[in-house]
Length: 476
Image 1 (tube, rainbow, N blue to C red):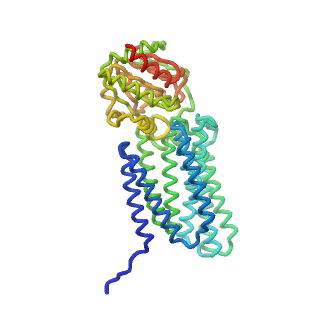
Image 2: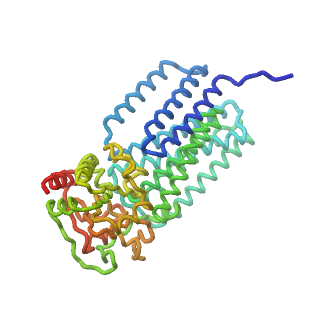
Image 3: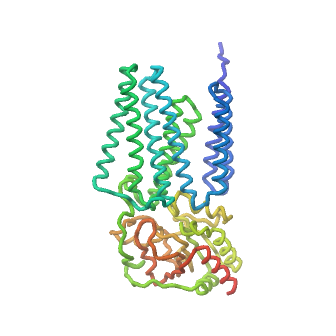
């Protein structure tokens, strides 16, 4: 006899949500389709939320409505008021909120199962995994936010015996987790030791999240944000197993997998392993000065140019490659850069944009800024695609990008960025660097490019400098 039993409607809603999440994530892979992908994923989230609310019998509607209204107000206010330069901080806060929520749900489920004396080893292990990973993601993300917001130093903070302390905390976390699982399985009526061990494991994980991010320097923030994002995805997926919620499992797995892949890609872009990022304290020691020029021979001279000199150089170029960095983001100069490019292109100059994978403070930071200014996507080139073009480039215009253009990465074995793939701007005929000062970048080292005889500096606020260059090109 054929079984005609159908799955509950909520399972179909979860299936649709999972498909929409996957399609949305796929569309996020290109700036051309990113907005559509974001809307499709948001639609999937709305479907799953409505399905849960309509099928759950334990919902307190007044509290739920208050929470939805408060969340909507915070979300709308954030979307309208947070500057693009603060987007990495916003990502860190949202990521931390996800990890914290997973940890809190896990704690609530642990206490509920313990009180009902129905907690089996498989359930307790899953709950503990969600709790410790969520707690670590929460505190690590908050510390990343503090560093990015410059509420504390962005430089690595290291101390003697740091790795030993981290190892001890990891042992405490694992030991407390094992003890909690063992206690729940052997003596479920004796709840006090299990509760103490559970929250002890969470506390150790929270402390470990802080201490792991503490020695991370600003230059490594794109990598650590991706890694913390993958942690939050893992916490969400395990929470899905705890709650028997398929959509949480699917979405958490997608976030965890994509975050892990992105972390590995960011590490590859810096020619460094994830373990080196976590334990290398990149940027802890700054060199005293740029020791050599792009060719390895120091000229000891930094040349400053005027706006008119640079404007003339740009106006009569055949090809200009613009290299955006965090300096452009800080000055909110992306719209001015687009206007300069339009002015140059109206004169027949070919303009391209060189995007380094770890430029800025989060993955894709420069792409987001330039997309906001409606820069045509075909004009954006990844590092591997644009580097062969630099020898044929008349002017490389570097706007605040420091470490990703430092030629010391090729030849200075003592440099902390040695071996990191960089944009080959020093191979262009002329290089113009827009900076506020000679202050080093996030890696804490001086840029040997600035002493290259082909390089000139244009000091000042990036937006004002670019606006002045646009006006200067018009006068030429």
